Length: 68
Image 1 (cartoon, helix red, strand yellow):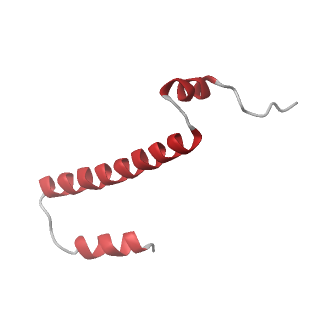
Image 2 (cartoon, one colour; image 1 turned 30 degrees about the horizontal axis):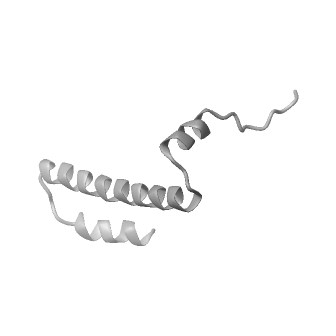
């Protein structure tokens, strides 16, 4: 098990109300969403990307073509 899983097991030994589980899920989701946003900002700053360049990248076809 990962260190996160072990820590969550310690928390979940308590019987929480349903609303508390929802709050905890939202809190964890917000935490990881913030981490993703921060990393994306970091990458964009390092590479000099803008919204426009990201939209262009999203439209590119970069998959390898395979012959049958």
